[in-house]
Length: 613
Ligand code: BGC
Ligand code: BGC
Image 1: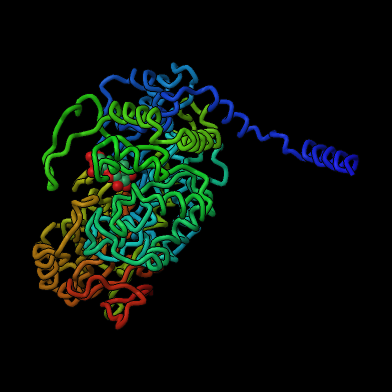
Image 2 (image 1 turned 180 degrees about the horizontal axis):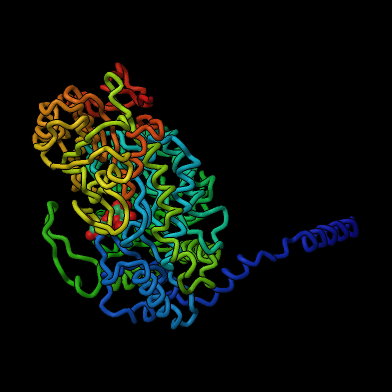
């Protein structure tokens, strides 16, 4: 009996030894080895993401072994040309090279519709327009082109795609949302992830995607930015989760947490949704990054904010403040708030680990996730920008892709008596409206600056007026007056009007009616006797009823970006309309929120509406 058990035991042991997985996974070996060498301070450094503008002295990157630097919407560098950006990222990377372990910095930027902080980059339509293409292959192609431009400047991470499902047009971020339909959002978001990451993060032209903002950002009450998403868990999962499920299937390497609150808890502190659902249930293997100073909004002081969010599953913390903000108290709607800096974050996190309030295993998990991604990106061999990719920024090849996106995103809402296409034998076509010769308005927010601006915000690209001049056949005169005063005698008057640029909470609106000034221009155009074609530039459906009545034809062009040529291509009939609404178009403010699957669904135009020639 005894002999038997000894033999069995030996057999079991032998099997165990033979079958024990020999760890020959180079990534695991590399990351485990790195982790074993790291001090607590170095681990915390990897979890620290500092905004470029927060530094007073870049030697802090070395001193604190900082793991990531971002450029927020308002973070300026002095030379914003492609070469200027490449120089800055190359330069910053050298500070990481001076650290003991030489772990490269991971740079992050909001390339949310092209590499939109770079002067001369191609600006793609914002997501709402891309949503109307309903074309995942095209979205993938646009993300691919954007990735090449990002990588060209030595940056390897974009805070995109936004898979918000905007359910209320009052929300200032509606244009960042592909659709109100979760399925369409999931499909297009996944296509964008694929385009950015190219199936192989180590490729020189791949960039890490950051699917955002997890979760429920588009579902807040009254469309308030950073507000409360007051839905039950079933609804939350049904509407706001599919985008993440699909993005994880495409291996999105990072996910950004959202400012909003659900079930009385800020998402940044919600362990159930960050860890149990995202990491455990959905098997997300990448890392979670916090949004801009968002952990500061958790209840309690900064030290407890850090404890709550890291224990909830946050892996990297986005910190916009540095030495200049130390001790600065800011007056806010919620009373005075002391600004928290990266020094505070590093100091408190260390204390929390030493006090056993954050387990070392949690820190190791966060750092492992970050190092895995750095390894996958082959960042250790990408310490400077790639010259060949740099030369692709603003290239014709990329502009052609953006033009295709513009053409497919246009939605024809009305076309009485076949007003469109514009006849190629027209004698004179008049353009009018604030948006006709205004590339800044075409681009909207998140263009060079956080809020964007009207006028010549970027170099390169084509305004709609210029596009008509380019496309006009010989013998057709193109004229322009902003107020349409000169439309008299023209065959057509194309009135380009709509929203001025904005971003985030600055775009929250209680009134979405097209402005009186814009309606007046349309009236003047109508009185001139010309056929009136309204082209609406907007980040969401506006309340357009009287304008729609006045117009002979009406086109929703969203925020098409730098390639106004795409608009002229379709209006002249060289291409057909393909765009279909990805958001329901409300009749009036009292009808908002209006979404497909509502009871008594009766908007002005239903989702998927769109005419063609
Ligand atoms: C926005 C994010 C953005 C981040 C960095 C935040 O305010 O919510 O979408 O990625 O800033 O600029
Ligand atoms: C930054 C943005 C950020 C915003 C959040 C701005 O100053 O530039 O990137 O999204 O603050 O409030």
